Amino acid sequence: MTTPNIVVIQADQMAAQALGAYGDAAALTPNMDALAADGAVFDRAYCNTPLCSPSRASMMTGRMPSEIDCLDNGDDFAASVPTFAHRLRKLGYHTALIGRMHFIGPDQHHGFEERLTTDVYPADLDMVPDWNRPLEQKLQWYHEADPVFTAGAATANVQQDFDDEVIFRTLRHLNDRKRANQAAGCDQPFLMVTSFIHPHDPYEPPKANWDRFAEVAIPDPAHPEVPDPAIDPHSHRLRTMCGFDEREPGIEDVRRARRAYYAAVNYIDDHVGAIRRKLEELDLADNTVIVVTSDHGDMLGEKGLWFKMSPYEQSSRVPLIINGPAGVIDPGRYAAPVSLVDLAPTLVEIAQGPKPEDTKSGLAKFLPIRRADPEPASAIEEGLVGTSLLETARREAAGELGTENRDVVIEYFAEGTYKPQVTLVRGDLKLTLCPGDPELLFDLANDPDELNNRAEDPAFSRRLEKMRAELESRYDLEHLEDHVLASQRSRQLVADALKIGRVRHWDFDPEPSHGYVRGDFWSAFRFGKIPAAD
Image (cartoon, rainbow, N blue to C red; front, top):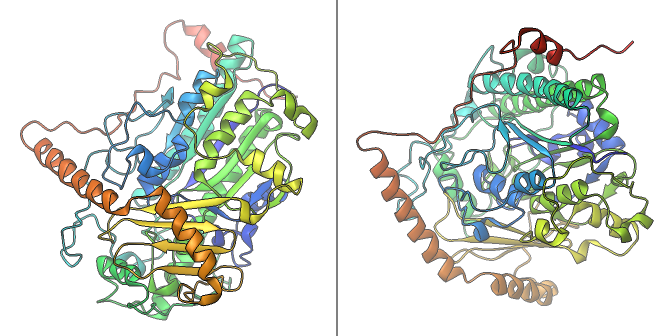
């Protein structure tokens, strides 16, 4: 076996609970379910912040948003911070990004050798929150309630146009990698990240996907009641920011929006199937690892909330499925809490192959084809705070790791709050702290719907104290609040100044395609041909 190729497929706002592989009987996700059936499924995977841009930056760097100072959707991502694209490129991989990654700032590659599409959202400092601004004074980019009321099938829209281009570029890029290796006479491994905008709101899937749910009994929200504001003021802030405090969707609005969401997930599943078929057609499937995940989930009407921005399970949990050659990872379901910061060290481990001591675990011995300036493992792995999912799976399968042995931390510093909010998941307990708000402690084993706050329950006092101490050892929330406020002021000044005079946007502008006949006429045709199998 040669060093495996890696394909990361990321959807936007795709909640774990909306996939058949995670137990939803109403979901129509046969392609993702098939990957899960003979792959590794992490049942308790979390994002590290329930918001697009900082979640993706955290995932790519393997570091927490606060560590890389990526606080919200209007915060620039520093070009000097290594990503998994930098690390794999250093190990000799060809690296390409196709689709969405919500990079803010002038660096729109962050280690990818190629980027084949622009993003669906702007790359400028357009979405800087303001914690000094009342939520009733809405900024124009805030989420709003309207997508819940207008949900339904669409013949065309911005998001469909974007994702249709993403899948087209993805399939052609796989052809291009086959062509390049064919021409070179050797197989350079590749990392391809394909990232879609669906099922992110507005909930407007193609009609073909919408129609598939005509006879499907999609469940209503299990607990649509809004929590008591004295216990959970954050949920009420989110409702105020989005306008749900003034406009409450009726049950038919809710059902239509949820049907549209499920149809959008089905649309993503179609694309997953197309990518798998292309890999098989090109004889790449047997040596390619496929990862399916998302940047965060969607509340979908639970607790009166929609979209993300909440530490509740529907918002903060993500699907995380890894499928690949035998020996890369043991298939199965894993219960230990993990998070998106674990993805970068996982990809690095796959790209480097097993260490000598790992050969006893049954991992295949990867044989690198080409590496650029080989680096010691410590240099490639330096700075990563997560743990390889391969290591987590090995230790859990060996009985060395239980659900209590892994802490997952979730941060939130964006719109809808006035103070830093931090959450610790430890075993079956989840604690959320936000200065000025009541502490929230949920026992997920006995209360998976997070309905009963146990923060005042004497039976949980010792564990609460230890978890609070853990968060307080990691965060000085008063200092962090000052930092966030100063960052908001600084970025708003820059954003305002850059709108004056000659404006230069940071959006990525893809280069014209050079995949057709250029230069040597007949050589272009020979290069472009991938012979069909007999």
